[in-house]
Image (tube, rainbow, N blue to C red; front, side):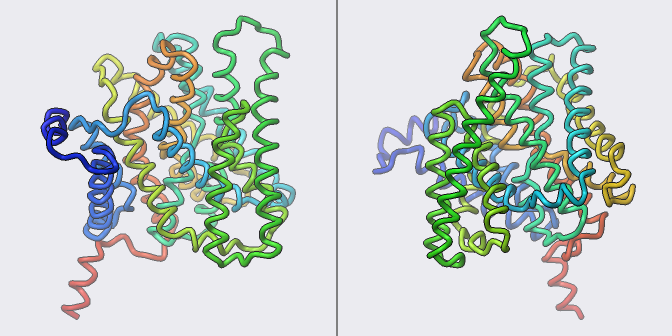
Length: 417
């Protein structure tokens, strides 16, 4: 593909640059592929997006360089921040007061996942710092993938809501711990204060930025209609500004957006109607995020020596999440079968995990490269296979309003009828 692009570049000079043409065509193909895949197989569109990005990455697509930096990194952070802002807006803190076992379930699931992945990798003689980084990354769920699956399947129910909440909370833990850990890689202090200080800085800065974001939007909602498209533009613009500021001052942009959404939900508890107005702009940004993740992950140097490690992380993470949700299930309001399907629905990994790997890369190229050599294949597998498993779990839980049948097959059946 690089040779083809070089030939094109000699005579084709678009005003916005060749990468813009490449990305425009790639997103057009991804949109069509996602639609056709859902129509003829019943799978969610995100699987089609990821497959197109994977094929482009394997073919040598030159529009996304690793490690991420500049515009590509900002777009990924903005896409993740937008998703987490909406995810935070789904969680009401009074829910934890009435059902504290949900929070316990989240802590048990995330902790068990990190501990299990760490010890399995250490047993396989992986370096301590690499195993620690992969364990923290493995904690994170993927609210973005789950949100797209819920949208495509029109799912609703306790398994759907619980999996979205647990994925959001596990992401909160992973963002905090990875951001703090990345800031201490070059420090030799081992005292407790030196360990807790970076966590406090990340949480503090992210909390301040998130609070300012929530207060600004709450003030705007006093005189702007929630259903206005101008309100949606204001939301995206303020999240973009927060994304740029949080990381600059030592916080985490996605974490700040998550906290902002969580706080705004408490200040403005009524159902959010502006999310419907985000429309095409948010959908395009989300689709670009999925394609970017799969392109970058597929372009990684695939090392046959890490195949066993990749498989170990995938299976350990999957079983740890299912077991963690099940262990803390008593008193949480789920049946045992619903707990199992909830754990299965939490297995996707995508943009948030890639962003966490990118943080390690920006802090330490040597350590980050070792983590990325295992994490990127895991992310690629779990963006595709995880989405399929989560979709299957939601259907088995009986919470989808659409039957898992190809739309084309349904149309043919209606014609015969």
